Image (tube, rainbow, N blue to C red):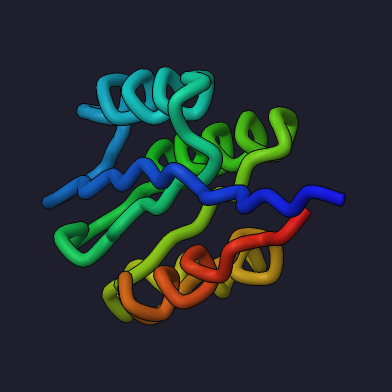
Length: 116
């Protein structure tokens, strides 16, 4: 019997500033392009630079999450500012999308190889 290790290839996105209806199209198209790419098995959106997120920004993240889910890929967020995190809590999306305190916490879940 042969054992092999499956390692995740992680794409990291680092949006900054405000993610609103005024600029969401570029963010969403880049996110969906990466999610659809065969190069990655996991996605981390590092929100440490995001100061504000409106409903359009939230929907872009939900679109990325749903697309990743439909392809069987992991989709997570990290480093949410309190003002951004409250949006996920109020909409109860924090119960659906994995949210990590920081990149290190996320990395701990990825670096565990899976033996097949």
